[in-house]
Image (cartoon, rainbow, N blue to C red; front, side, top):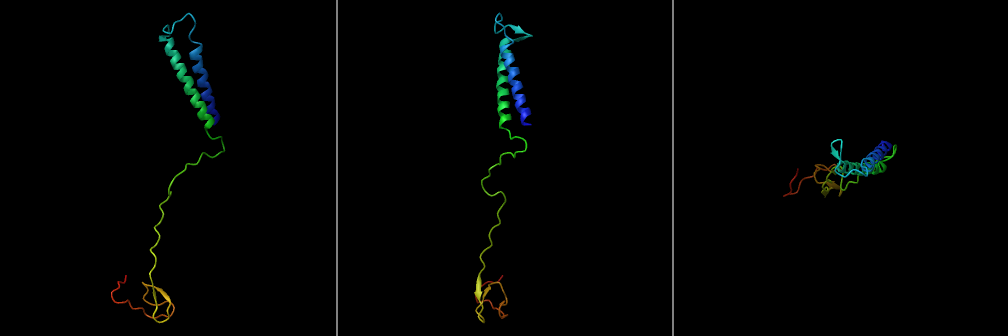
Length: 124
């Protein structure tokens, strides 16, 4: 692919240069017609084609060679949504054994005592 783009750019530069250099002759003025189109038009088209060929040539050189990975796109910020961290768990102390127990527990996992919610606290 790369060599084809480079070759196309070189070919466009050659054809554009030929339109600029070889079409006009010394005895013709810029407005003498060749095939119904003025020489000045041929020169403008040729110069534009040569310039476009140069750009294609440079793009072909800048393209990644076969077998080489293309440049990586740099992204700023997370690519996937990050999960929100869980809220910290509230712990209570078992009145029987003193173990730390999650507040939503109904029984102590250490001693098995039934935990009663305190007055004025909500239970889920």
